Length: 384
Ligand code: CAA
View 1 (cartoon, rainbow, N blue to C red):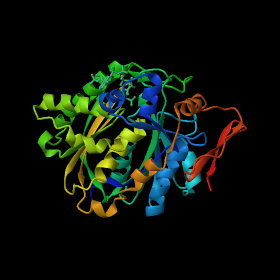
View 2 (tube, rainbow, N blue to C red):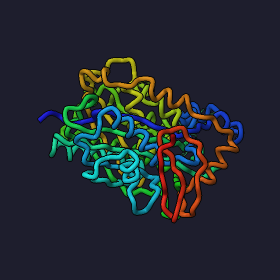
View 3 (cartoon, rainbow, N blue to C red):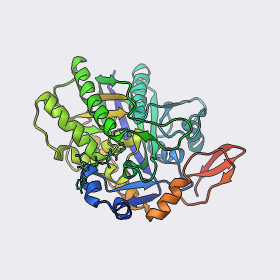
View 4 (cartoon, helix red, strand yellow):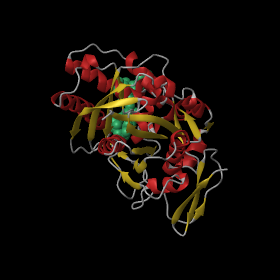
């Protein structure tokens, strides 16, 4: 059988952007704390008629437009910011995209780790049935309370990943390093739309999970550190990846080169934290790079607070450059409409999922919009 892996990736984000310079000015913080200290420049903010469903559907639509629906029998939707306690967000996407009825759809949750879990399940399905393809969607709106240290590390975005046999972009290798520890570093009780977080603990929990996953990968017969050309990490804020990677290099006795990681940060510095989508948006940035990565091995690390970490490796396919859409994500980021701090905070106050009937104003220019709640149920539609 041919290898299995990532055939294509598409990214979506929110309609609006808040520049962290503006937040810094409002809060009386030195902007360098954001740009250098946490390594973020801005974050995406969804319009009132956007959420994980509209962003996830926008990203998935790109893949369906390029590859059609043949062979897609599974949609896995990973999110921390689900819009319903029962119905999977992927079922709305299934409807919006007009996918065939002969498709299974399910939602996965483990904080920011769910996207990696979905990709692993997808790889397993395709390994068993190589004629099938699995549509993985990872989408989140990262919301913390305003006036907390976590406020500048919010964000919004989605990644859609088509997993197949004989993939165009990356063949994923079989060994995986996994790590779970029961830690209260970040969590969101059912009655809250904003996460609770012990920021300092979350940093050490992430680092421990990365090193722990590395050790497990080594035990599972994974490659040597020097045989991995580039690493991409989950990026709650990009400095987090630097801290974790520095620790890994100390652990394995390798030199640390920050510039090796920086290219994977270019989109995440602009979207902010996208939880389940963060790692895959970092991967998209790396693949959009001018450097030729053909035949190179990548390390992909996912971390979800609470906590679960997983490190996998994949080899970039020889012709991957023919299948990239360079410039697409950059144009999405540049098209965002800037918000003042007051306007962002007003949207933040109204951002929680609700069962009250209310129509949403028409704002987004993305392909799909959240029309509002009718009879307690959420309704979505094409924007045009
Ligand atoms: N110029 C340059 N750097 C500056 C600076 C300045 N003027 N002022 C401060 N800094 C630096 C600090 O030295 C510090 O750097 P180091 O960490 O390298 O020492 C950095 O800026 C941050 O400063 P603080 O630690 O004082 O920042 P803070 O208390 O305001 O909080 C935070 C930072 C803990 C990350 C907070 O933003 C937070 O809680 N974020 C949410 C939690 C999070 O994202 N955790 C990451 C792992 S959890 C996860 O991965 C799951 C998930 O997605 C949530």
